[in-house]
Image (cartoon, rainbow, N blue to C red; front, side, top):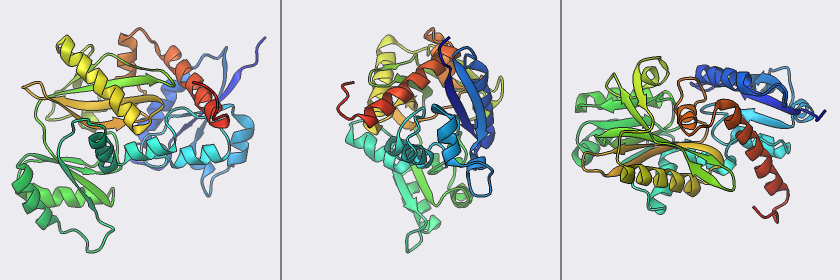
Length: 330
């Protein structure tokens, strides 16, 4: 009888997406084959100051960590760095790609360098002196972008801290609300059109999944639309031409490569009425719940959750082996 792989699923943490993390964790736990894996589940907080576990215990008990944490502390490179210091293989992207993708302003810089079309945007760091004045930003960006525009807390996911600003009098309240979540803000030109997303999976070799069309029944694809059953029509494959499908998939692959992602990513885009495609952002640990987009796209490609999670774990070992032996030919 072959030895089971010891998998520790880490969830929770301290970000605004803790609840989403609990849903992803449960989906992972339920779909890991008990014949192949010995699974344990731990809240990230149990390893932090005041917790009852140590990182050395994790190293001793786990062959690989499956990261089911979204947002700050789990998706931004900090956890990845700790696991690398302890030599523990983990699912998903490494330190740099995780940190870059979590910072929306830096992501846009990478997109532009790679020739990936993305909406115009302005970044503000509230930690820098002099502190940016929201009224001045409102007047400047209102003249440059017009309304509506999109104001985002820079390091959040699941649409936390995202505001659609329809009029000038909504700008400062949106700024103040987003600033409570992040000291870095991104204000983006609003691109009307069809919202789509495209997942990418793979390690040394990557593939784009079928494109998902997103049709929220509310004004936009916010937290409730993402995670409430029936709040959004998610159509896979998207009802777009074969030509547009190929372009969306190509952009998802380019974004994945440009950021240096590994294992999985999901890139969100808008398609205008004229057929122009704009890339909005890339998620390195997309949701893995029943209502999440990456699992739906994988199912459309014939990849069920147990196989998908098997692949993520295999890619974690592949990446770890490459890091341990830089001369390894991938």
